Length: 357
Image 1 (spheres, rainbow, N blue to C red):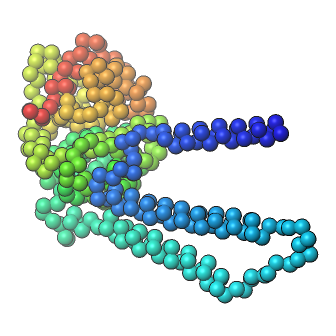
Image 2 (image 1 turned 120 degrees about the vertical axis):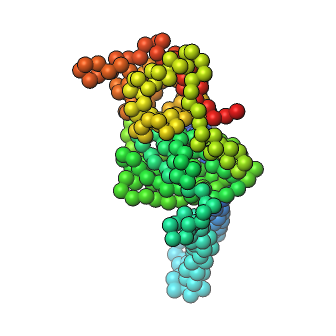
Image 3 (image 1 turned 180 degrees about the vertical axis):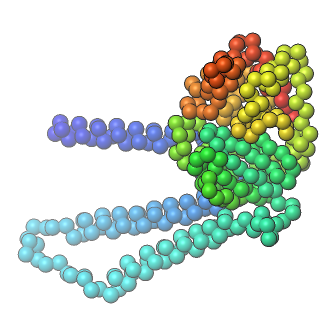
């Protein structure tokens, strides 16, 4: 008796823990609150399949309980042989036809949505729609680059898109295989190094806001920290943003920021990063750094957090390519850490890089 009570307590505890853990996670990384066309299609499929499964489980459970009580062994019936139903044509037709019908109910919208989600005709060369917005997305260890080729604009970490229209993406991996995923407004697709995959995103008009994305392909020690943000804005605000990015002014406006700008160009920063059209594309473009929502994709966006990152990026993103490759280059090829004065100046400069009013 005591053992049975102990087993029930353990079972109850595990059940409560399972329910608690099922609610863990980040509320902004969910497919259950769709804010875009693609996400709505996927949510519809999940609901259809869930309803079918629940109905099947309920019916099977009811039949099981009925049979359990209706045909249970009774005293005096030990020698009674129940009616044998093998070969019953009606039953065999039922349990063959019903699963087929359920599969058809699920297959029709699945096939339809699959073709719709794969339709990138407006971005194809031979059928290119001149009004279609095409963005080149390149995934690196552990950051994202977003290029708007028709507008000669490059940014990183924060993808800006207009609401109310499909935005077409060319997806590619810059070093190893990654995967692009924005659950609230779209689906997931791999970014390979040897070919370009294509998909589209769509955020409903009136659903402006910040949507979170992640890499969903294990790519290295900081895979879990390879985040990016999608900023969905109105078409008017998007056009303004594009114009400002194309004509961004990176001139420092304070004395300390000017020192930081000089450090940025004289140290190794400009060898990897870019501001506007000046610099390299080996690391995130910093043209609108002050307007972003996170530092390194995962840290709060503040001067204090930026300084922490500059002091020791390895602590916050293990295996990143910045560690040990910035600061004052010494004769042996290694780099001396930045001084606190240099960190203050660089922080001041980077937080002056804005295209907002």
